[in-house]
Length: 150
Image (cartoon, rainbow, N blue to C red; front, side):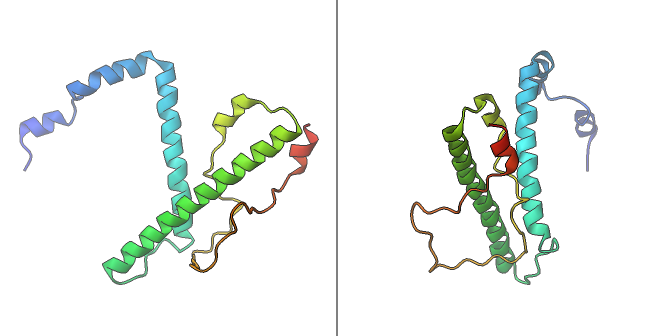
Protein backbone atom coordinates (compact mmCIF):
# COMPACT_ATOMS: atom_id res chain seq x y z
CA UNK A 1 0.00 0.00 0.00
CA UNK A 2 1.34 3.47 -0.87
CA UNK A 3 1.85 6.01 1.87
CA UNK A 4 1.75 9.79 1.48
CA UNK A 5 5.51 10.00 1.04
CA UNK A 6 5.39 7.63 -1.93
CA UNK A 7 2.48 9.52 -3.45
CA UNK A 8 4.24 12.88 -3.05
CA UNK A 9 7.45 11.49 -4.49
CA UNK A 10 5.67 10.64 -7.75
CA UNK A 11 5.36 14.30 -8.72
CA UNK A 12 8.79 15.43 -7.58
CA UNK A 13 11.98 15.34 -9.63
CA UNK A 14 14.77 13.41 -7.95
CA UNK A 15 17.46 15.73 -6.59
CA UNK A 16 20.20 13.83 -8.43
CA UNK A 17 18.59 14.47 -11.81
CA UNK A 18 18.30 18.24 -11.40
CA UNK A 19 21.83 19.06 -12.65
CA UNK A 20 21.18 17.00 -15.79
CA UNK A 21 17.85 18.71 -16.41
CA UNK A 22 19.46 22.13 -16.01
CA UNK A 23 22.23 21.13 -18.41
CA UNK A 24 19.60 19.73 -20.81
CA UNK A 25 17.75 23.04 -20.82
CA UNK A 26 20.95 25.05 -21.27
CA UNK A 27 22.78 23.00 -23.92
CA UNK A 28 21.15 22.41 -27.35
CA UNK A 29 23.99 20.08 -28.43
CA UNK A 30 23.25 17.80 -25.44
CA UNK A 31 19.61 17.66 -26.47
CA UNK A 32 20.62 16.74 -30.04
CA UNK A 33 23.01 13.99 -28.85
CA UNK A 34 20.39 12.49 -26.55
CA UNK A 35 17.75 12.67 -29.29
CA UNK A 36 20.13 10.99 -31.76
CA UNK A 37 20.74 8.18 -29.27
CA UNK A 38 17.02 7.72 -28.71
CA UNK A 39 16.41 7.64 -32.48
CA UNK A 40 19.02 4.90 -32.91
CA UNK A 41 17.38 2.86 -30.18
CA UNK A 42 13.97 3.31 -31.78
CA UNK A 43 15.33 2.30 -35.20
CA UNK A 44 16.82 -0.88 -33.73
CA UNK A 45 13.53 -1.65 -32.01
CA UNK A 46 11.65 -1.08 -35.28
CA UNK A 47 13.94 -3.58 -37.02
CA UNK A 48 13.39 -6.10 -34.21
CA UNK A 49 9.61 -5.60 -34.45
CA UNK A 50 9.73 -6.14 -38.23
CA UNK A 51 11.66 -9.38 -37.81
CA UNK A 52 9.29 -10.51 -35.07
CA UNK A 53 6.01 -9.49 -36.69
CA UNK A 54 6.71 -11.36 -39.89
CA UNK A 55 6.11 -14.25 -37.55
CA UNK A 56 2.72 -12.60 -36.88
CA UNK A 57 3.98 -11.28 -33.55
CA UNK A 58 3.57 -14.56 -31.75
CA UNK A 59 5.90 -17.02 -30.13
CA UNK A 60 3.98 -20.21 -30.85
CA UNK A 61 6.32 -22.47 -28.95
CA UNK A 62 4.71 -24.01 -25.88
CA UNK A 63 7.63 -24.44 -23.52
CA UNK A 64 9.45 -21.53 -21.95
CA UNK A 65 12.78 -22.96 -23.08
CA UNK A 66 11.67 -23.08 -26.74
CA UNK A 67 10.27 -19.55 -26.47
CA UNK A 68 13.62 -18.41 -25.11
CA UNK A 69 15.43 -20.11 -28.00
CA UNK A 70 13.08 -18.45 -30.48
CA UNK A 71 13.62 -15.00 -28.92
CA UNK A 72 17.38 -15.53 -28.94
CA UNK A 73 17.18 -16.56 -32.58
CA UNK A 74 15.26 -13.40 -33.44
CA UNK A 75 17.94 -11.32 -31.70
CA UNK A 76 20.54 -13.19 -33.74
CA UNK A 77 18.67 -12.36 -36.96
CA UNK A 78 18.59 -8.66 -36.00
CA UNK A 79 22.33 -8.71 -35.24
CA UNK A 80 23.04 -10.48 -38.55
CA UNK A 81 21.05 -7.85 -40.49
CA UNK A 82 22.93 -5.03 -38.78
CA UNK A 83 26.29 -6.72 -39.45
CA UNK A 84 25.38 -7.40 -43.09
CA UNK A 85 24.34 -3.77 -43.59
CA UNK A 86 27.46 -2.44 -41.88
CA UNK A 87 29.79 -4.49 -44.07
CA UNK A 88 27.98 -3.50 -47.27
CA UNK A 89 27.70 0.17 -46.31
CA UNK A 90 31.45 0.20 -45.82
CA UNK A 91 31.99 -1.46 -49.20
CA UNK A 92 29.59 0.99 -50.89
CA UNK A 93 31.36 4.00 -49.37
CA UNK A 94 34.77 2.62 -50.39
CA UNK A 95 33.48 2.06 -53.93
CA UNK A 96 32.14 5.61 -54.14
CA UNK A 97 35.41 7.00 -52.77
CA UNK A 98 37.29 5.16 -55.51
CA UNK A 99 35.10 6.79 -58.19
CA UNK A 100 34.95 10.34 -56.88
CA UNK A 101 35.17 12.48 -53.78
CA UNK A 102 32.28 12.22 -51.35
CA UNK A 103 31.03 14.53 -48.64
CA UNK A 104 32.59 12.95 -45.53
CA UNK A 105 30.32 14.99 -43.24
CA UNK A 106 27.37 12.82 -44.36
CA UNK A 107 28.93 9.53 -43.23
CA UNK A 108 27.99 9.85 -39.53
CA UNK A 109 24.36 9.97 -40.64
CA UNK A 110 24.47 6.52 -42.30
CA UNK A 111 22.72 3.77 -40.37
CA UNK A 112 22.92 -0.01 -40.73
CA UNK A 113 19.41 -0.41 -39.34
CA UNK A 114 17.43 -0.49 -42.60
CA UNK A 115 15.80 -3.69 -43.78
CA UNK A 116 13.77 -2.70 -46.85
CA UNK A 117 16.17 -4.66 -49.07
CA UNK A 118 15.77 -7.86 -47.02
CA UNK A 119 12.85 -10.22 -47.57
CA UNK A 120 11.64 -11.04 -44.07
CA UNK A 121 9.67 -14.28 -44.06
CA UNK A 122 9.52 -15.18 -40.39
CA UNK A 123 11.35 -18.46 -41.00
CA UNK A 124 15.09 -18.25 -40.43
CA UNK A 125 17.20 -21.35 -40.92
CA UNK A 126 20.91 -21.67 -40.24
CA UNK A 127 22.95 -24.32 -41.98
CA UNK A 128 26.09 -25.12 -40.00
CA UNK A 129 27.74 -26.70 -43.04
CA UNK A 130 27.34 -23.63 -45.29
CA UNK A 131 30.07 -21.06 -44.96
CA UNK A 132 30.93 -18.11 -47.13
CA UNK A 133 34.48 -18.18 -48.42
CA UNK A 134 36.68 -15.60 -46.75
CA UNK A 135 36.80 -12.35 -48.70
CA UNK A 136 33.78 -13.23 -50.88
CA UNK A 137 30.90 -10.78 -51.11
CA UNK A 138 27.80 -10.27 -53.19
CA UNK A 139 28.22 -7.55 -55.83
CA UNK A 140 27.14 -4.02 -54.92
CA UNK A 141 24.03 -2.70 -56.65
CA UNK A 142 24.89 0.74 -57.96
CA UNK A 143 21.70 2.70 -58.52
CA UNK A 144 21.35 5.30 -61.28
CA UNK A 145 21.39 8.17 -58.76
CA UNK A 146 24.79 7.05 -57.39
CA UNK A 147 26.31 7.06 -60.87
CA UNK A 148 24.60 10.18 -62.23
CA UNK A 149 25.67 12.48 -59.36
CA UNK A 150 29.36 12.10 -60.21
